[in-house]
Image 1: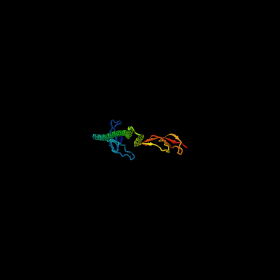
Image 2: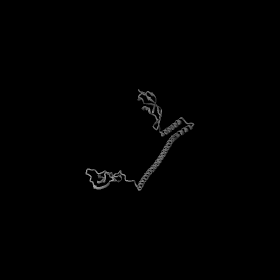
Image 3: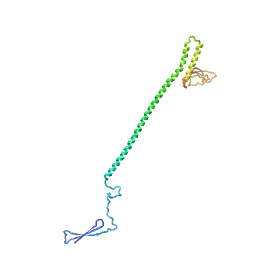
Image 4: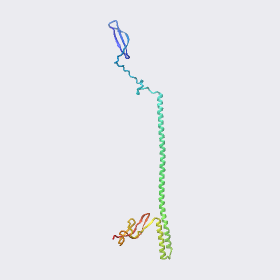
Length: 240
């Protein structure tokens, strides 16, 4: 009995073949093909045809093939250019920092030299001020020494001459002290007692005088440049 079969490959074309034989057991059937057009039904989905990633231009992750040697060479040249530019920037910044460092070091050395020079000048000024202050004070005392020596050189001086010479010498000494800002402290009677400039030796009754006031000066005091060099020794009135 002749057989037949139907083959339906993708694409919609159907191949129908028949088997022909003359006996019960066919030795090798002869195939006869008949080509007919097969139209799939409308509800039948089309066979799945995956797109090749190498041929899909809309896929950003798709493989586009290996880069050419020219592209590799251009990319390497671009990388080398970027590296050279970055290296040039770093070297320029390093040169700027070195120049700034040298400038700051020079300024530091100059400042140190200025400080040392100023300190040396200040020390010299202080030394000179002390030296010249002593010299000026000593120079002001030389006339007093001359007067004393001249008075002692007179062998037959009368008491009045000695007294007159001593008074003149004392005046010279007071002038010398005043020129060097040495001022005497000699409070008058009745002056309010000042513990900063006066030193009380005793408390004595003083009728008619306010309490805690100077009665008499036993020894004058002196100040130098408004600083007490020696307080005046005084007696103070007692409370009545």
